[in-house]
Image (cartoon, rainbow, N blue to C red; front, side, top):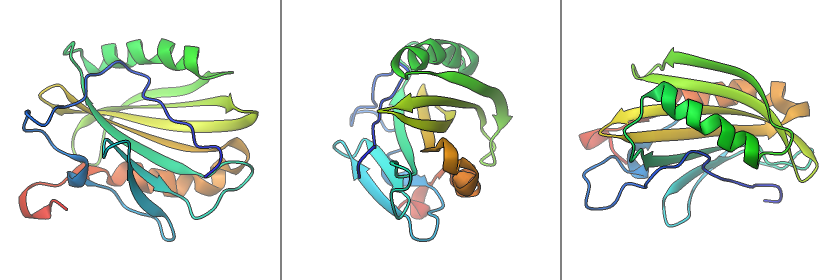
Length: 171
């Protein structure tokens, strides 16, 4: 799994067990054929991995939930996120920023950017989706820039399929 490097670039306080909030077990997302689903970092991260590493990178979707302690609007959250991402990601170049109505019915923001990590040119698409009660879902699709077009359809399907299961639908 060489080449995987992660960071949550917006300051959040993670949901504590004392707060009745959705868990990663309730995150529903389409898993492309051949991909694997792993929980990491004490079950605070859900990682969907492509079957193999190509061009020095293993395409993936990194999903994490956090609590926005400041109770910011979506626009303010993204305004605060972008300088942090730019600082932490070498060669950062914002390609797009768009507020959308996600297929789940929630308002979300999608940013897409390129950067370099350990000499590998990457493109990432990040979904920032408030879930209510200051809880925010972050999902970042990450692939090598030269292979982006190959993985983009899978990334779009995964990001568009993300939802929070309720009741008996929860995993």
